[in-house]
Length: 249
Picture (cartoon, rainbow, N blue to C red):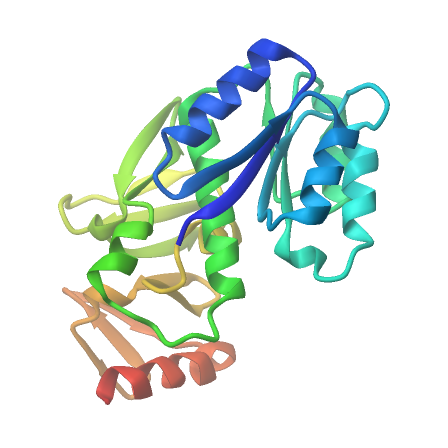
């Protein structure tokens, strides 16, 4: 799966940068670039666009005004927005129009990739009515890694290396196959759930997300991954049993 994207920014250098980032990301496909919201809206109305990267402060039609127009359209959940702006005070307004994420200029490719990966996971869950597949083509489309804030740096984490994720106060512990000690990242389990592709990860408890690829065994609603035993919470049993039924067939 590739997400069809457009970029909108009235600053040429900023527009060039975000287009460059889109083009070097394997699961994104740049469909158009625009320097104003009116021109972009005309294109979006006539073409399939899943993801919009755009500035907020633009002449004629601001990013926030464009977001409100799109929000009123049928199937608006099929087109999501990631704002990129130099003004942090717009963050709250961005969440009011249900922006998928918010990039504060100047931002790095790592920050861009985290936001794009969140978008990929969103659309994957939107299309999750389709059965889970492990075909080579689908595996290639899924992002291979994410970046997590660990202490004062961004750490690259290969998705296949994640065994499970555990909530820990205001942090999460990311348990890896390749390391004896988990990574401690200042984020929420909900944010991790949005970030990780649902075809390979599942939340099974209010405190745990597990890698479906690394489950060794299941007995009496307890999952074993290596030496760890993780209980399936009551609120998550139905979804997990549905996964198990596909796994057993």
